[in-house]
Image (cartoon, rainbow, N blue to C red; front, side, top):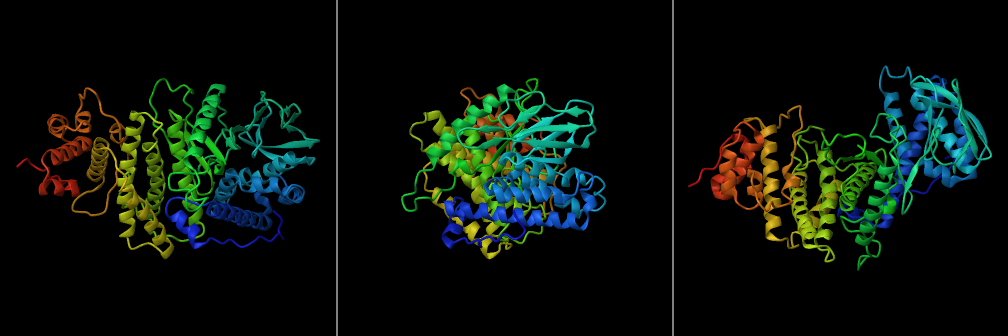
Length: 551
């Protein structure tokens, strides 16, 4: 992390690029992405230091930036592995990107020290972890200091939202002083207390469960939300099971020992899981959907609401790591010429998407399809679990192929982008030979048709060809709902999922004709009950408001 260090060039072979293009990876391809993210962080850090050198007032409220930087350089010489771990941590990436974006915006520099001052917190954490004594100013939020990769130390009292304290590190112990007092002396091995919350780690491995760092979210800093003991235990249990699933999914490939096919991953490559919407935090029984997200600024980090079981956690980890891989690849290669116009259909979204979002979705859901493919073929699972997996494999295979076709026909792909899209197409085409039980295949195709039909009804306005999205997203209970067949179907959707489109059609006709969800049900059930040219036309352009009539 010194200004004069030199680093080897980054090289990615054609074979490794092709492995990434297939939706999978090799260990050398993943190492390339990780090294590339390290280099990017160094460039971002240099940009920040250059800005602080030109305008020291941007951090002066905390202290001279050279004080923090000198300490970081000392750590890099003493314990380079500690400096590298902090540099490449996902939260450092989010902090740097957020702070530089603020620096490049107008009229946002008045309290810039609240973000730039993180440099001092980073230096303090680095010194603490490698045993260097220090006495330095640190930025606080409501009287608390977030020490990156370490934990949260707090001084009780009435604090301003943003203030400056002082951290003293002496022989591995530390204490925080503010205008309200001083925290008890603490060490890295101290148990959690009122003034001290250590960062938790999930086992096996070293994945952090980060509920503390202000830069753990997608961009803007957020307050700490320490998990309860019960929620933490729940995460640990789910993660251990998910880790076992992913480890079992990734055996050596018969041709290339380190090749990971699409849908598999090395769970040890994940750095951080950020819990989103704790289940035991007073939800009053209100259902909240499972959510996940990630950002290209924080490689190998993922924000996840706690799923109902380990299989869904493993699926989400695969999904979000696919996004991390593609985002890191986009830092090296321009894959498409995107005008950012949001005009394209994405089968997993309610809103129109731009091409970059479409590519991300195709890459992520190819991985998801591969994950469910392995679940479908798992002979140790019971029949219900395999049928559930078969539905999701068939659905995501179909949807990802549709999006890959859209990307291929866009005329906006660069040569490397063509390699990526063609690689995904080859993977998905190969999976077409995978036999899926007919009931699961029917439900997957029907759910896909319902989603596309409703999307077009909500987002397209004839005679316009480009979408005119509404301001509100719309719920999609059908995609998860069609994974199951009701033993005693009573609703139109249940009848349709059970394979009785004629009965479903009659029930849809009795519902609100102005509801796009109902209209989509009418169009799809009618097309299935009375197939033919009119049905095909209605499914292709449902926004023209013509329903196929029985002949």
